[in-house]
Image (cartoon, rainbow, N blue to C red; front, side, top):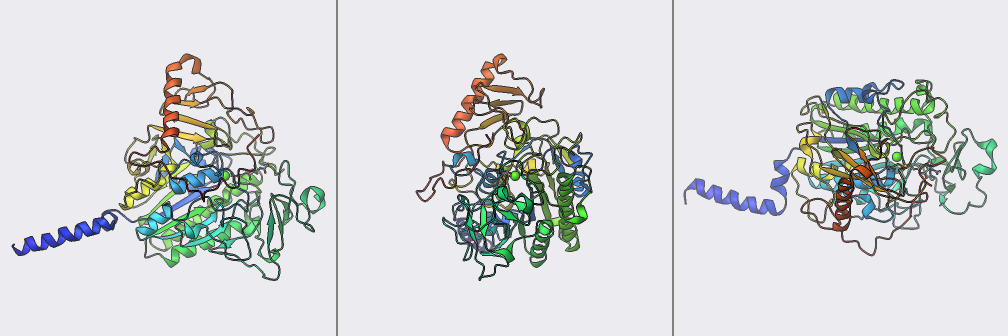
Length: 535
Ligand code: NG6
Ligand code: CA
């Protein structure tokens, strides 16, 4: 054998070994920083670049101007927990019981050890962090907030976590950093209840004089910072967050992580809390819009985006950072507090021209802003490709060159070319979910089918049309994006075809070619059923 042949033989052997451990694939890929900015209840029409005139969002608009702005992008679900579950696992959340809106003391709903965006990127050499809203549960039942809080983000692939456990309207109103409540005084332990009131704890509905913000529905249990909340908490007084400084706390931790690992590839899941209720902007943003607190907190969120971009530039890493900005579900004005969102809305259209809103199977429930920005790689464009957040996992796997196993990401399709704006071709079809697991809809490029579904047509509290009806609804989204004219009777063949597609996606247990259906273990309890089903 000549020397070069020996060398090649060595290389070949090394190559096989390397493939076995997945290294070659990892080296073949790119490793930009990945920053996912995930908004909470931000509507399609709430951002300047999507048509909002009443809310200045210069930083989000800048991302759109310099990146790709998508017009047909979807969250998997019209509420938070399932959308976040789908985003991180690449599985349609309705496949798994217990993925509805979680109470603040629910156990973790992602099985530790499962491939998530974070665990996959960590395998590829990334430093991984989640900063902001979690709402995927913590612990494995009967959580003690005073001890080690696990499993949680650190057990599903993140190496650093600074989180709000559930939502800003749910107790306990404390931050959790890695495995601990931040600022907890051990002589004042935390107790949380989602059932009965805790003796000695003030109840919001009995003490309106203690409230600085009134509730309209729900949110009549515990009180934190003069704001009525869902759930009761006793103790932990020193650890209670300040609503006004939440945005800067999140920015501070996110930027610190970027600074610490500027020389490594970073995955930052930056999950902002705006404009979810209660809407309590920092005083410096009060009055920045004519819409009251809901508009003002969107301006505050835009400031957070600007701070993050400024940090990337200051650290000299913007060119190798891929930023994706999107939202977990559509907009709602009155989500349980009397905060002027309805009375001061004027002619602002939070959902743009779409019907419904948060909780809805109509477009406004899941059609969300979606912007992809990467100065070193992406050229400015507008994209009408059909894209879904459930594809995040397969798309980053494609980017970094780590193969997915058959048990991973059952519904996630590699979509890198579309997400980078290099191809106008997105998905052929996507399934979306209203407030409950059985409220599904399927859309293709042209059509959308909402199969018959029990439940009220409109939620009387939020005023949102949910899309429930006893008959099939078929909309021609190309001609009728506002879903005004049900054409099911005129196109029975299309209805039948879409029914069959949806039935197959459900019964197969997966929709990614090469994936297997998920094996559900007995440890996966259908825990913490959604406390509220939107009716
Ligand atoms: C609902 C709350 C709503 C909001 C939502 C979760 C009531 C009446 N409504 O149960 O205010 O917190 O849950 O929103 O309590 S999400 O964006 O996290 O899914
Ligand atoms: Ca949400």
